[in-house]
Image 1 (cartoon, rainbow, N blue to C red):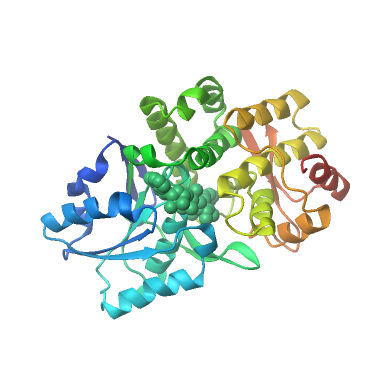
Image 2 (cartoon, rainbow, N blue to C red):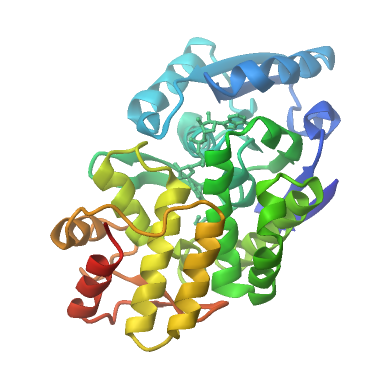
Length: 360
Ligand code: NAD
Ligand code: GLY
């Protein structure tokens, strides 16, 4: 097991990464002081992992309440949140009782927001079970739900007390979901870690084949990058925005197609190629760099062009982005590979050329 730390003064917490950690509930017990815990999961993950976890906690004297949500991005909404509140209130769940998110990023984000708001805040533990959630969403305290008018528009910064990433849970993950997680892994290389990007270029096949060592390394290195960024800029007043490379375009794709049609990681992949294309039009990246980015996503089996929503629709949806400031869309673009910047200074014709060239 490798343990990393997110350094946020009194809100600091560990990220434990390793195989078989779900069998190791002793790590969880200090976070459950009153021997009561609520596990939030979904209809796909619960049959795989909830029973074992509840039983192990039970044999350590913990009383477990479980809440099972429907599975899917389309359920990352107020209705699911209310299912959690209803269950907690009906059981008179108390302020000291932690909520444990057992699932991917959707479960992590909703559960975190429920924890931030129920009784004005209860403890929260992340047990991410997808690659995407192990390398990104479980770390950093962004929690929330979607709104029909925009993705992740309702939420709170609320840090977990611990992240426990059991890499063996990835064995049951469908290939398409594994690939979606790889999109966020590639992101770290592109925005701030060129040696990691080179490692990914050399090891993509191993990751796709679920080589244990390669996955463990990629998760650790991704979490290390994320922890550094979050530790320096928890509330996204600067550097943290760089973690949104590809997301302005990607969220527009997700929302424009209807939540759940494109996976988040798929939107990020096509969106990142758009960001690279735009960076070339601004004469920052060379055409070989853009090809290199596109090639890596292609090798990961991810989409490299977006759907043809039309420039007007893309612009309207991108205008709903959380990063919009003073009415201007702010883009995360690449000065060079391994070096991202945030800018709102993008000539409209270049943006429209990118949207035209990178959608089909
Ligand atoms: P997800 O939570 O929908 O999980 C993907 C699918 O895999 C689901 O069907 C899920 O039930 C299933 N699944 C989960 N674990 C499994 C396992 N071990 N075996 C088999 N199936 C399993 O999607 P995701 O990609 O994990 O997360 C995407 C979400 O995360 C999006 O809503 C996105 O906005 C959010 N996100 C949040 C942050 C953040 O910082 N909070 C960062 C990135 C993404
Ligand atoms: N996934 C973007 C962030 O955590 O800031």
